[in-house]
Length: 242
Image (tube, rainbow, N blue to C red; front, side):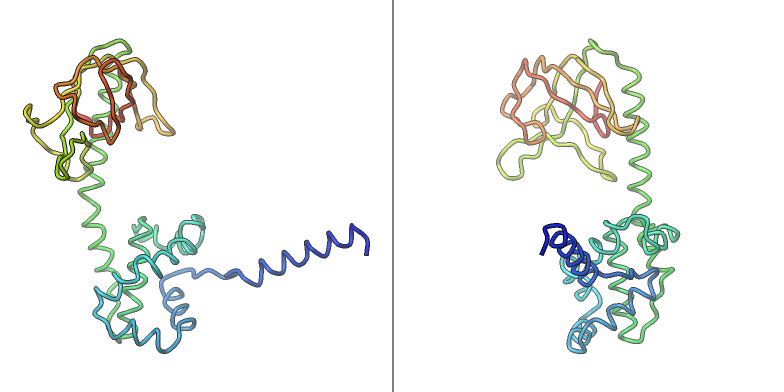
């Protein structure tokens, strides 16, 4: 057997193995996703899922079947019909998509109305304050980015989490970002801007800051030890400064 023939034979085997062990047809919509599990789960698996409460059934599978859905039908196939289908409904989070599929499957097995419109409204209601908050913080970040110049002096105010006994300056995530600075607890950094830049998106803006002083030296900054005189990169989104 020639070397060339061996290589060709190996190539054919690899192609065959890949095709035979991959899911060739992805569900295109919710109905097809539900049908997939009805066809591929055993009767025992379907009954076990069906006989649990809806919340428990969906929650228990979030990191198993739910993750499989997200990895195989959503994250790796961003231009797939399934992803486009949910995007057209206003649902973009992979976690939300997998939860809707599992919730709908559970209701179908229990002969209940899937009530997709209500599911969508609930997720949109959850995300609206987060989306609105993120738009606001991005606009504020861009405004700060345009206001300050390299070499300017700035003051950075950060809340400190000491719930586990340590001190770590953090940045709160949307939608709950409002807080009042407490000089006895929180961190005040005075510094000088060394560099301004953005990553990927012009609204994803950063400052590189030389730390000139800190009101507390026993505090980490975003889980990182920093001393006066050292440099630190700060995302401006959600950062309180003046």
